Length: 299
Length: 232
Image (cartoon, rainbow over all chains, first blue to last red; front, side, top):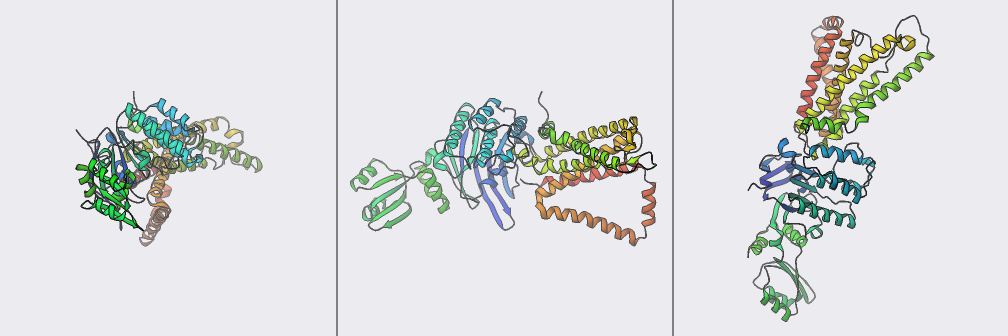
């Protein structure tokens, strides 16, 4: 089956800055994938290339089986909602009406529901909206478009916790009813962790991790306790980091734990905590070598 | 029946009907009122036509519409699944349609102007000497060409600004002045000002309209070339 998104050796260079280099991954459909990385990692550039807004310097991009750049047939099946979206001098209802023209699967009822839920004033000019309201407008358009490939770039920037929860709920409900490929870049990985089927981590323009979230959960554990006991516990295992403070050591080790490991940890009075997706993404970005994580994921 | 992608771009831009349909004529009406006031305050003289320039407001606003059609509206269009080429064709279609309709408004205004003796005060508001002073069909053609020219010229400026920011826009403006200066230097070097003067005096309004139409084609080509590699 053709993947919804297929990127091979993708690079984007701006004079002296390499925004993306040799990025290769595929995302099937239906799927909700998280695109994670630090500021300036290349997330927005990647999404812009997928949405046909930016040009690649090298490599190949396929969305729904075809090159998206200047391809109307593909572009009308993609929506890209950006955090820094520039809107025309229109009112909220006009922007929604404009977006509805472009998408054959546009859901006017969902748009109306979201406008109400986010308390968006339909007759207010967009330039007079607060940052959170502009974000909510982007979310409304992104979800109501029901595009087969939905790209969200930091979709909840400026939204409060209540509004973010509303977004997660709406996204999940709509995705369940209308499965499709949704790729969202985010810094709040743990908050969105329950939604994500897959996680793609980029750092300094390079792909450092691409894995199913179910495979990643439990692949790394933080072990905390007396230094000697921690050292004994992690002996022979791959560690991502070790930090000793006084007599206590905190080590992050890779590898799934079995019942004997847990029994030993209990015996040694060690505290075990599974790494969250956010922490895994941070480690992947720091190490630039996901092989340890992916090896553990495979084991 | 669903509209074509180009039709959707036209509809997208016309979501803001007030700006694209009413604003030029609101400014034209303002210019009309100002001209009336000025004519009331100044001596009539012996001419049977009192030329005024208020109609220029409508043409200037159309230039601004051209800028607006890409400076603000383009990034959102690209986000909602429109390609650059389709957007360009949509905006150009809108420019042509508006120009044809606005040209008709000018022609109709000339008709009313003639029927009312220049609004009862010999005012030539919809007529411009030499340019828009012939039969109705010629005025229509010339006005429509002027409208589309100003729209696509504004659009090209908007595209340059979106692609290169203020520095690029300044260079673009300066480059045009540079081309004119170079042309003047060449004509001077070839001692060709007599021929230029003869060409200008011999040029009919229809001939000028043809030159303006050629300029439209150049600007469309330049605008599309600018848009092709534009990123948002």
